[in-house]
Length: 96
Figure: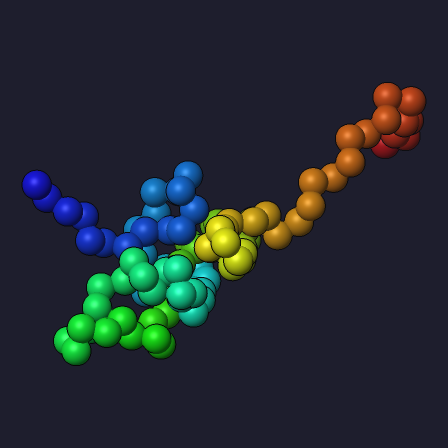
């Protein structure tokens, strides 16, 4: 079995691989006690209480999305802007 250890964009719909000079945005979130229970123990057998999770959004995705930590859910991807309300059918746009 071959594992791909090359990090990619945190957006599951994006296939961009991390490149230091390609831009984008790097996020750091402290791991919660729930995350720590899943973490690999350090050399003393204890889990590192200072563990940090790192996530990256590529240049394109970081212009549209951001990452946010939600208690009980972990890190989630969110749009930067809320959706615009639907236009009303009676709305008139002037011709140019």
